[in-house]
Each structure stands twice: as structure tokens, then as C-alpha cells.
Amino acid sequence: MSDLHQPVLEWYDEHARDLPWRRTTASVWSVMVSEFMLQQTPVVRVLPVHAAWLERWPTPADLAAEEPGAALRAWGRLGYPRRALRLHTAAVAIVERHGGAVPDSHDDLLALPGVGDYTAAAIASFGFGQRHVVLDTNVRRVFARAVTGAEFPANSLTRAERDLAATLLPEDEATAATWAVAVMELGALVCVANAPKCGQCPLSDRCAWVASGRPAYDGPPRRGQTYAGTDRQVRGRLLGMVRDHEGPVTKARLDLVWDDQVQRDRALSSLVSDGLLVPEGERYRLP
Image (cartoon, rainbow, N blue to C red; front, side):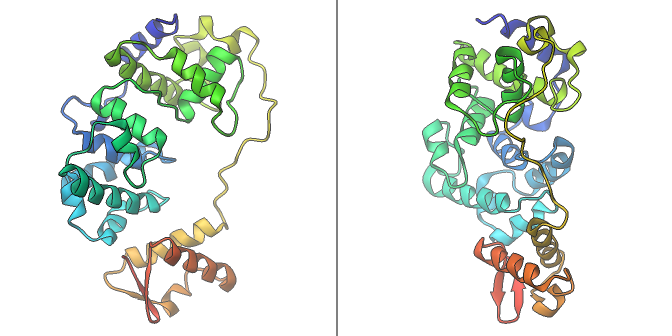
């Protein structure tokens, strides 16, 4: 056991948020849905959509039986709507390959469409209590500060980070699963990106970054989250127009969404290419 384990695990026991996908009654499918929804989306926005989703589709088979457009409509304004299509496609694969039950093998999870290494490890760890390295932005930031003494990790995940996370993973399977979510929670609530709450951190007395005087980040420029005026914003408005309409929407109506014709047409074309909209003559509908 690392000397980081006990303080973090004890902190988590006291401060963990009561989230529906963490409860002992939660299904693995609930965990899987949450992992898709939480990618680049705050918990507060996910909670109501996750609840509505699980009420409508309590199992992968329930979702797989619907058209992909139903998933897009229910996704609402969570953003990055391709996640909804990927989740639907994964549900279909779960039904076809695993009899409707989310598989407990990391390799089988990774083989599902739309499931990458992080998501497979998170489902295996949080859904089945297995021992896996689970590295999201929050975890990477905690390890960067507490162990390596850097304010922020590199822009892209490195092999050194993965190796470090592996060495810090407790040997006991159940403890490793709790450690994975505990470090993630610490990064989400205390060791946050801006204005970290070091006075509330259980690792403050052994944090390499604090010990070195909290030096400012001096690496490559960090990626921003620009949205206004981007193709992503135009895509969101176009898709929202179709999603909020009962039937197909005419091209003329979509043209009212954004003034820049070149950008609007480019965004519309990309929505079609991504399978988020289906053209029918001069009309567009959900898949």
C-alpha cells in the first residue's frame, strides 16, 4: 500500500457524493450510461438526463430496440451528441454478442463500439469492482501534483503517467476499485484545475507540488474549450432544431439557424457524415 492510499480512501468515505450510478443498487448499465454522459460534461447536467434515460431504458435491450434517433432526442442538450449514437450502437452490440448483459471482461468491453480504454476500465472498475488503471483528467491532475510536483499533467496521456498510475494501484481488487473512484472524486471536488482547495486535501502534507511551493505550470499551452462561433456551436443549433421538431425539418428552416451560409452548410454536411442527421430531399430528420 502506498502512503497515499489511506488518507484518500478515508477522505472518500466521508466526502463522496451520493450519485445514482455509485449506489449499491445501481446496475452496471447505469454505470455505463453515466460514463458515456460524463465525458466532458459536468455531473450537475448529467443527473437529470441519466435519471430519465434509465427510467425509459433500464437495460441495454430496451435502448437497442429503439431507433438511434430516439437516443439522440433523449440526449437533449448534453453536447457531443455522437456519444448518444455510440451508446445506442454499444447497446445493440451488447444484445447481439452478450445476450443483453453488459460484459464483465475488460477485453469484451473494449471491443464494444464507442468504448475506449478509459471507458472500458471505468465500467470494469466501477461496475464490477475490478482492478484497473482508470485515468481521467481529474485523476491525472491529482497524480501530477501529489507525486510528480507539476501543477498540470501533459496535454495528452503519456506512458509515464500510465506506469505511475499502475504502481499506485492497490493490489486488493476491491480496494483498487474504490481507490480509482476516490482519486477521481478528490480531483473533482478538491484538487480542481483552478483554485485548488489544498487546505481541504488529505494529501496536502505529502503533496510534491505543495512541498515545492506550488510552482506555476510551465509546459505547452493547455487546450481551451472555445465554443462561441465554432462549427460545434452551429452543429448544436442545427441538430437542436431537428431534435425539437416532431418530423423532418426543411433546409429552408435550417437556414434560419445561422447567418454564415458557408459555415452552416459545412456544419450540416458534417452532421450528415456523422450519422446524426439523415437527408430526405430538402428535408432532414434524426436517424
